[in-house]
Length: 114
Image 1 (cartoon, one colour):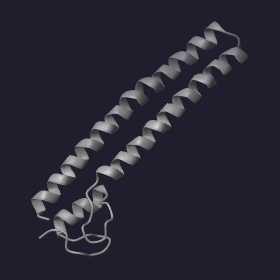
Image 2: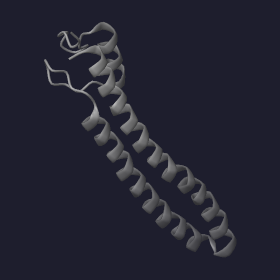
Image 3: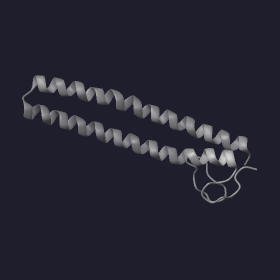
Image 4: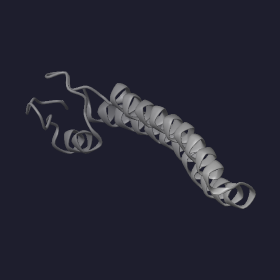
């Protein structure tokens, strides 16, 4: 594998990772702010026990969706990362940078870049 090919694979991987992380942020930030708005609205509109029940139900739905999306982020990062041809381990962000710089896999020490 050439240095340019490895760098290109790392850049493609990072682009996919950024896209999926952005999707998570687009859900998490408005969802978190929505939780605050819901909390104020429910406390003003309903009595304490009913408000807490509503808030808890909505929070559990929100956190479940968030965890599913976060799990997807982790899975996609693992799937799109380039693989060391010698040991078959996927490069992390840091190990990919090291492999581009040094030309060697940081796990097995094999020559990755020709």
